[in-house]
Length: 248
Image (cartoon, rainbow, N blue to C red; front, top):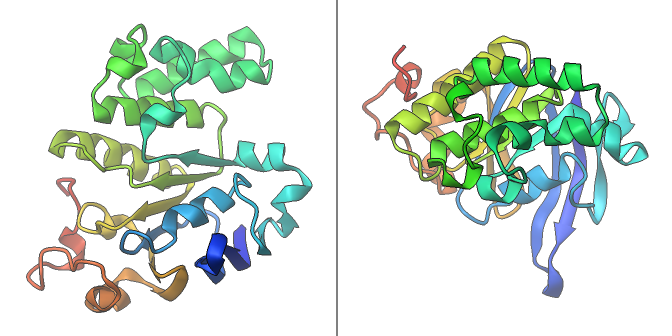
């Protein structure tokens, strides 16, 4: 289980970007963290595998502070950032996906087997020799996701994964996310836009001004989201079950 306990962080001049945040993410859960721009969502994400260090509080993985072994924590907690280009390092899609495993000096056969598996699972085999920066937005996200998945993380954190994507791009990425959840991965999806994926989550966390203002089952909170600066998907005309960009 991943836990955040009493996490606080401030910028210069004392402005709090995270204020005493406590959350837990049970194994195999699908949590959406929602809030308007500036609510602290991305800052929270960067603490979850130790990219940022809190002024106060801690992040625990199975009861141990992740800072006791950051390398191990980062293998178990994979981050997918909003800007896919910031995570691309390889000259081709295949080399980019393999990069992390190569750095850990995995046997070449193991890397190749896992690479082929991911190219097939994410339906990007036809892109293997393409330069990642020439891909569409949705293709870049799937390439980055594969680069994270090759490390076989137990927990996957995605920051605004649908930003800038067309319908097909959103649908493709969302299919990957829901499949990973069905395979037992813990999913933490950070967004300010609920209409694309809320139907698939079992928990909703609402943030505003660096604080968790409410958390619980989506069905219990959907009527409250507009009170915290989050647009209610499709007004009041749609049921929770239809708040997805997948045809279900």
